[in-house]
Length: 258
Image (cartoon, rainbow, N blue to C red; front, top):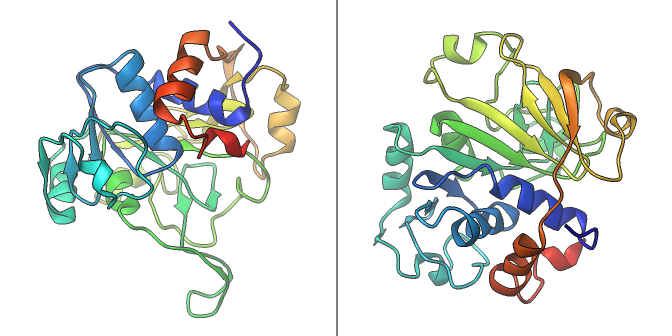
């Protein structure tokens, strides 16, 4: 083990461990793509990566800068259309997705549309859904990678771009989304969270090295539930860091930002 890693490297390494060999994951660029590449190179060689722009099962030589980057289709089984990718998700063929957003609430609902004002006259406008709504609605396990602070972890999203557990309980399925799908885990620079199986509220399951549960609570805008036993997140191994730094992001486009 080593302590010489930054928060971005920690989040990517911890998230990558969730991706089982032989499974499928729909990702965008940035940290989710890095996590998928690390998983593919370290533990899950048969992990199938899918990009919303249409690339299916590429073997990525390096991180693309966008989902439409030609590198996203390197040695892909197929480069098809966004519609075909979303249909694949809707048919139930995609196990995981990683998403992010400007806001997330206690039920894992995500906002990537606007903050403040109204939809017509917002204070801040963001890119919107892209493929996030479809991924969050139809992939079996939705995971979130994001930095933790009170501005992002809010009591109520100003707008729900991607549905999480909606209002908790059975509300997601009552709204018509497929049973068995939904938010699964949240990875931040401070902790790892999952969701209570009955209330569907966000719950701390492990705290990252260097932080306390109070740090996590102080940087969250709503009351977090706590697992019966909260552990310390396993830090990156030397091998994970080697692959991440040498093979996944050798130019430090992503991990150099921390």
